[in-house]
Amino acid sequence: MGGIISPGHDRPYRFSFYSNALSATIHARSLCELPAEGESFEALFSKLPSPAARQGEKTGGPPPFSTSIPMPRVRSGTSMPNGQRTPGSSEFAPGNQTNGYFGRSGDKASFDPGRPNGPEGSDSAANTWWLDVLSPTDEEMKVLSKVFSIHPLTTEDILMEEAREKIELFRHYYLVCFRSFDQDQYSPTHLEPLNMYIIVFREGILSFHFRPTPHPQNVRRRIKQLKDYINVTSDWISYALIDDITDAFGPLIQSIEYEVDSIDELVLILKEAEQSDMLRRIGTCRKKVMGLLRLMGNKADVVKGLAKRCNENWRVAPTSDIGLYLSDIQDHLITMTQNLNHYEKILSRSHSNYLAQISIEMTDANNQINDVLSKLTALGTVLIPMNLVTGLWGMNVHVPGQDVQVGYTWFASIVAALAAFALIGGYTTYQFMIRR
Image (cartoon, rainbow, N blue to C red; front, side, top):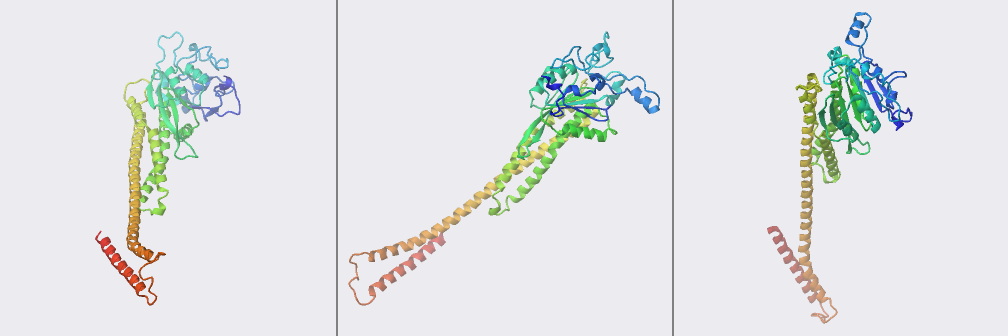
């Protein structure tokens, strides 16, 4: 698959390389486009001057020869997937380096991957690089795994898009799996998980993700703003990525808080005509809360484990000063999780109150209907006997009084009897309903 090195201009920029020695971030469509023309990968990763060189610049003297920073290891003869040799592979040969993930050819003591050695270790902020990769292919992961000596378990987690958030320590690096989200603009309640894989070496960092995300750009912007005030180390970049992912949940949680407060206040005071949309609002908000709780998952435990490693004697763990930053993220995550659980309880109570209010209103309506029906029943009780009497005298048969031709005695008597019955029946029904 030659796609990882072919410079097709219709493809997105999937590789971003940051270094403290560069004034701008390098964006490339493929691995081979990262170095400048005529530049090797070794030169790209080793442009940083040594502390002695920087001291010479400050004092005005000529900078001495710059030693290279610890470099990724590329075995001689490593090939790209299209058959070409890895650019600069001859320069990466063990015999040509004085430090890195390998020792000088013939040295007995090789480089300790857990701690920087030499003068560079005292100023790790000057020896920091960051390679961000979007949607790496199998061939690209194979090349990067060989170059940076990435463990097969790490490679498998990245290629299989492992969803479980975790931290793992290896001999040369530690791996942080942290999960962000990608919100669908057409569905405000749909939050698609987005996995970020961060491999942190002592000298640099690799980050992988399989969908475009603004987090790397936000961190680079933050570095540009704060680089004069902080030491930009690989541990700090890892912290900044985790912090930016955590901060991305803030606006959503804030909007949920406003919605929950509105629902809690209106659920019991809205009129019947205004409540038609309330159940949908409650359901939509609860769906958002549950989606965020699912995404928050065990983030606090991951950050806690990472901060815990800062206080232990792990050679590849973050430095102790980063532990303060991580503790702040942990507190933030715990607070957000507690808030979401609180909002879920409020929504659950509001949902119950809304259903209870609907039930009460339906009961009132049923009572009113029953009252009307009882009145109609009472009226029917009075009118039906009267209708029976009039029906009997209206039949086409011989009835009493039919032969009387003079006067209205029979007619008046029948009407008076019906009126008396109506008065007595109405009074009796009224008294019965009052007693009930």
